[in-house]
Image (cartoon, rainbow, N blue to C red; front, side, top):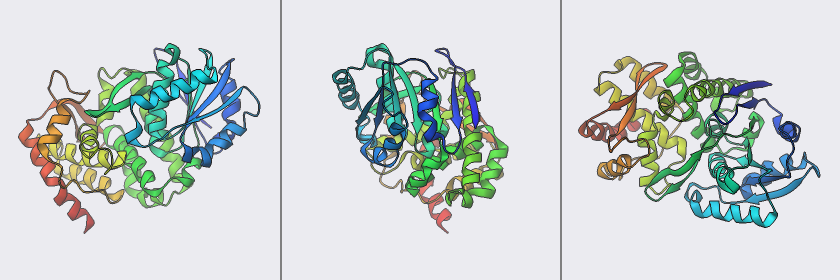
Length: 367
C-alpha cells in the first residue's frame, strides 16, 4: 500500500492508495483515535454502489449511519451545508464525531466544509470514489461551495485526518466522469512531471480502457505531485497556484453555463488549451511543446462545445474569481513540458483571441 504523507499546519495526514482499501476503512479510521460516532456523508447513487460496503465494515462500531445529499454541481451551495448540519444535530453529533465523506469532488468539497464549520470543526476522513477526487480534490484541504457568481467562493482550508483511495472504486464510474479525472492527471504532467506527461502520451488508450495497472500508476504519481506542492504551500500563497493551471477559464466556463454543460474536467481541459495558447502568445513556451500539450489534452476524448459562451461574460466571471488579485487576473502559463509560470498577467484582447480559437482547435482534433 502506498502511504503518502501530507504536511499541514493543522496536523499532517496520510493518503493511502491501494486496491482493496475500501475493506480497510474501519480499521484505518479507528487508528485515528476515539470518536463518539461515525457519520457517513454521501449521495444516494454512490451510497448504493459503495457506501453500504464501506459502512458495513464498521459493524456496530459507533456507526451512526449515512446522511445523503445531491452531489450535482448545482446542489453545491450553502443550503446543502445547512441541511447536512441540521441532520447532524438531530443525530446527536458532537465535537468528537467523525465524518466520512464517501463520493466524488462535490461530496468531498461539501462534506469538508461541513466538517470545517460544524461545531467549529470535527474530524474528517475522505473516501474518494471518482478519479478526480482520488488524485486532486480530496487532497490539500480545500473545501467549499458555489455562489451564483462563481465556483468555490465560500469555503475554508480544512485538511482531513485521512484519505483512503481505492482504484477499484473506479470500476463503476461513468466513462465521462473517468475522462473528467484524466484531465486533472494530464494537468499534473504539464505543470510538474515530464515523465508522467510522456507516460500519458503512450498509455492514454490503456487508461481509457481502465487498465488497473495504468490507473494505479497514474493515481499514485499524481497524489505524490500534489502532496509535494501542498506540503510546501498549503494556503496557496505561492507554489500551490500552479495547481490552478486551466482552472481560471475552466471555472468561468462552468459558471457561465450554469454548471450544466460541462463536467469539471471537461471545462478544465478547455482551460488548459486556452492557457497553452496564451503561453504561446506571451512567448512562454515553444510551439512544438504547446502542440504536444494540446494533443494530449484532446486525446482524453470529446468535450462539449464552447460555442455560444460570450467572452465578455467570461471576463466578468474571471474578474470576480477568488484567484484574482485586486481585480487583476493572474494566469498560470506553461513554460515547457513539466513546468509552468504563475502570476502572469495577460491583456484581455489576447485572452479573448485565445477563447475565439477554441472551436477550431476542437474541430481539428476531431479530424
